Amino acid sequence: MIAHNWDGVALTQQDTASIEVQWLQNGDLRIELDAPFANDPNPNCAKTACWDLWDFEVVELFLVGAGEPAPYTEIEISPWGNHLVLQLLGTRNTIAKGLPLHIVSLDRGETRWNAQAVISKKLLPKGELKVNAYRVSGVEPNRHYHVMTAMLGSEPDFHHIKQFERVLKRQY
Image 1: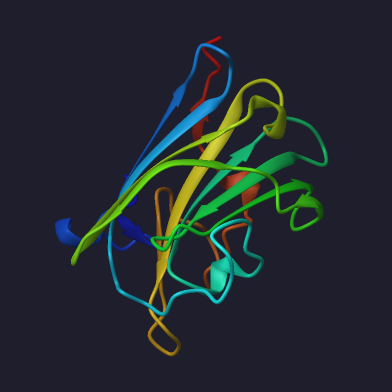
Image 2: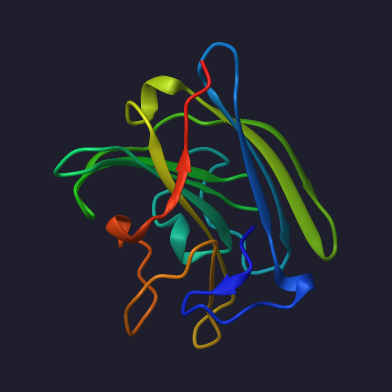
């Protein structure tokens, strides 16, 4: 549940978002999300991989593997059908971008939106994964950064991967 501002302050029920993941029998990961719809501007890019998607309304899922530097996959989905998948090795060190994500469904209403997507196991770090999820909305200077697990620091920064607490065990 994405139920806090980046600094840990609890959100109202209507501002919370949910994100659920499920391992499929083939080892791929299914992602289901439900989030408030802020009706922010639509990204000016195709309904495929969209660089700088984090500058728009988006829900993000980070999946971090073991090792030093830590490998992690960042998955971003917008209510407009755009997405971005990055593989990183160590904090903010992108080693692959614009990777495929299969958007199974997307439904955008007046006040909420939901989506289902599947990502290939080949794009995820090996072994047990630590996770965090985020929702970003609003236009500067009224940008909102919501999180599953709050991050330490004086400003929003989703790449504090050593602080991730929730563990996602593989089930295949």
